[in-house]
Image (cartoon, rainbow, N blue to C red; front, side, top):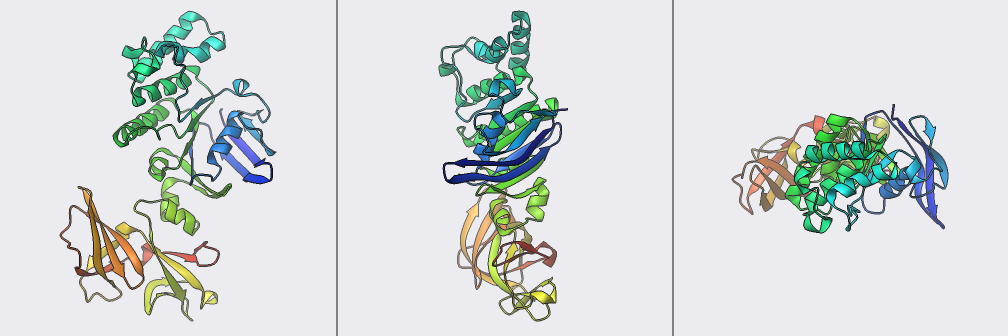
Length: 354
């Protein structure tokens, strides 16, 4: 069983602490995505697992074996980098076979593995080409093929799609998901792209400042974010937020209007943040009780849906609407919502309430 345990891992560079006591447990075959803004520590954590960095404190165990201080080539780990890291003087076939050659795998077995992986990734017609003769997507497939051929206990992907154009990223994302479904190898995937995180991960760890903000399934993150940072980071367009207060009876108040969410009365007079996802706002008649009155400020049609930016008394909100829509800039409208879809966060701690 290729389970991975990261226990109390911290990492400092001089006086700068990058990782703060990180603990994670990955089940055999799990696809964990590390996501967060630049500088949050996700690549550093990946490098600690890979053996490219020594942790300042903590332990890393793979398949029951302590690998904390082992060199990378003794960890049974395969890593795919953002830069592909192919050998320019080798052909595609030689690049894929190189890790097997280093492990003294017999030539016939190497050839079989290369042909199998190349056919799976649809690059079998490129085996005699050098990397300079390949497109970005083809180079990335070669890098993935080189990792697959090793049949490691753990795959590590460090932003492998960030150098590809938008369409190719979508295509390669689907290919990666199919590969994981087919092989089921335990995987850690680093990205700053929350769409990649949501579509690929069985679980997602959201990092900020070297700390895990939340570890959960994609839908748990989206529907019950632990704090305001997670709520704003996960989801595109981002969640709408506005300042709110709690009444004497515990009602969350947006201005003078109750939003339909009641908290414990002990939170009376607490400043809170009201949040609602763009798809959870709907256009209603202007006289709808409790609706937010607004003016259309900007239209962003994308084809299958449209994003409508509206000015309200509480700030700018975004509505996600199906189709091209029939709105015009300057139009007056009212937006209502289901109270069950409202998110409330403490304005000071930014932690989820209720």
